[in-house]
Amino acid sequence: MTQPIRVLLAKVGLDGHDRGVKVVARTLRDAGMDVIYSGLHRTPEEVVTAAIQEDVDVLGVSLLSGVQLTVFPKIFQLLASKGADDMIVVAGGVMPDEDVVEIKRMGVREVLLQDTPPDEIVQTLTRLVAERGER
Amino acid sequence: MSRYVPSSELVERAARGEVPAIGRLISRAEAGMPEARGALATIYRRAGRAHVIGLTGVPGSGKSTLVAALTARLRTQGLKVGIVAVDPSSPYSGGAILGDRIRMSDLVNDPGVYIRSMATRGAMGGLARATLDAVDILDLGGFDTIIIETVGVGQDEVEIAKASHTTVVVSAPGLGDEIQAIKAGMLEIADIHVVSKCDRSDANRTLVDIKQMLTLGAATSAKPEWQTPVVGVSSYTGEGFDALTRAIDRHRDVAFGTASGSRRQLAIARFRLEKTAENLLIERFAKAAVTRAPALAERLRRRDADPYSLANELLAASFERGSAHERDHHRPPHFAEDHW
Ligand code: B12
Ligand SMILES: Nc1nc2c(ncn2[C@@H]2O[C@H](COP(=O)(O)OP(=O)(O)OP(=O)(O)O)[C@@H](O)[C@H]2O)c(=O)[nH]1
Ligand SMILES: [Mg+2]
Image (cartoon, rainbow over all chains, first blue to last red):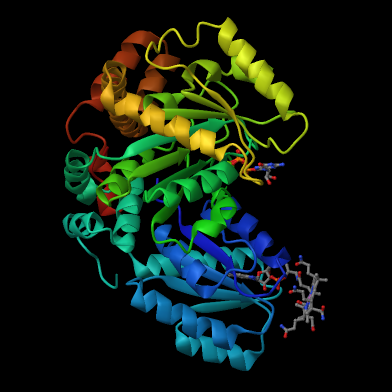
C-alpha cells in the first residue's frame, strides 16, 4: 500500500467562490487522497503555515477573484522563508491566459482552470508527486 | 526542505521546535518508513514531558470547536499546544476530507500552536496508527499540552482512554446522548465530562442526565483519587471554560503526582506496547498472506487439510524472516522491508 497524497486546498482573500474547490476536494478524496480544506478568506500567511504544519505534498490554491498576481509572489516568498521550498504548488479557478503564464513563471507547477475534467486533476497531482519522488 | 533530509537530522531540528521538521517526521511515521525507525525510537525515549489530553465524543458533538476554544485558553496560561485531529478515511477510496482543522482556523497565526490532521486509514478505535508517534514528536518539539481529537466515535471505540493522561468526553445536547453515552461505554472512560453547546436551551437537561448517571453508576469507583466532574461549556460564548481548564489542571496533577496517575501511565505504556505488537503482527500476516494464502486456500478447497492446521501454517509463515517481502518486486524499496 502506498502512502496517500496529502493536499491542502486553499481559498485566499475575499474570494467567496467555493463551489469549485469543494468539487475538487471530493474528487481528490475519491481518488484516495487525504484532503484538507482551508476554508474561505484565508491570508497567504495562514495558508502557508497550515501547509507546513500539515506537511502536505501539494498546496492547491483556488482563485476566482482575479488576485493571482499578488497572491502567488507572497506564497512563494513565505514558503522559501519558512524552509518549505519543496512544496508543490498548483492553482485552479478562473483567470486570463497571460496570468497563467506569469504565475507559472513564479513557480506554480500547473494551472487547472474551469471545465478541467476530474480525472485530469487527479492525474496531474499524482504525476507531480511522483516526479518529486521520496521526501 | 529542498532535498531529502535524513530523519536523524530532522530529530534535532524538531527538538529545536522547527515546524517543517516536526511536520516531515510525522509524515514519515505515518508512512511507516524504515529509514525513520531509529529516529522514532530516539524520539520516544526523549519524549514524555507533555500532558496528553484525549478528546472524544459522537460525531458533530462540537469537539473541534471545543479544542480551538480550549487551546486559546491554554495559550493564555503560556502553554504551547500541539493538536492531532483524527478523521475517518473513506472505506471506498481510502481517501479522506480532514475537516477538523477548519474549525480551528483562528489558531493558525499563533506560533505556539501546531495542528496536524490525520486520517484513520482503516484503523479502528478512534485513532490512526501514527497518532501516538505524532504525540511523541510534538512532545519532543516542546509542546506542553497535546490534545488528541479522536474521530467521532459512536460505538465502544475507546482506545483514547488508554492513550491519554486525561480523557475528556464531549456530549452535545439534543443528540439523545444520555443513551448513546451508556451504549458507547463512554461514561466509564471519562476523566472529565463536557456538555457542549451550552448556549442552547436543552443543554441543562443533558447536564442533569449525565450527572445522574454518574452518581448511579460505579463509574467513579475505579478512580479513587478522582471525582469525575461534569462541565457545561459553550465554545461560542466562552461560558464554562474557566471551570474546564481548572478541571484539566487538577487532573494533570492527579495524572503526574499520584499513585493512580502512575498506574495510568503504566497502562498507557502497556497499551502502546500491545498496539505496536498488534500492528507488527498484522503487517507480517498480511505480507505472508499475499504469497502463501492462495496455495493454502487451494488445499483447503480440496479438503486436504482443515482450516486450523492451514491457518497455523499461514501464521508460521508470517514469522519466517525475509519470506514474503523478498519476493515482492513491485513495491518501492522502503516497502520491501517489514516496518512497524
Ligand atoms: C457560481 C458563481 C458565483 C456564485 C458563487 C457560489 C459559490 N458558493 O461558489 C455567486 C453568485 C455567489 C457569485 C458571486 C460573485 N461572482 Co461569481 N461566478 C460564478 C460562476 C458563474 C461559476 C463559478 C463556478 O462555481 N463554477 C463551477 C466550478 C465547479 O468551477 P470552478 O470554480 O472553475 O472550478 C473548476 C476548475 O477551475 C478547477 N479548480 C478550481 N479550483 C481549483 C483548485 C485547484 C487546486 C485545482 C487543481 C483545480 C481547481 O476545478 C474545478 C472543476 O473543474 C463564474 C463564471 C465562470 N464561468 O466561472 C462567476 C465568476 C467567477 N464570478 C465573478 C464575479 C465578478 C462575482 C462577483 C464579484 C459578482 C458581484 N459583482 O457581486 C461575486 C463575488 C462573490 C465573492 N464573495 O467572491 C467573475 C470573476 C471575474 C474575475 N475573476 O475577474 C466570474 C468569472 C463571472 C464573470 N465572467 O465575470 N459567483
Ligand atoms: N450552538 C453551538 N454550536 C456549536 C458549538 N460548538 C460547535 N457547534 C456546532 O456544532 C457543529 C459540529 O461542530 P464540530 O466542532 O465540527 O464537531 P466535531 O465533534 O468536531 O465533529 P466531527 O469531528 O465531525 O465528529 C458545527 O456546526 C458547530 O458550529 C457551541 O458551543 N454552540
Ligand atoms: Mg471534529
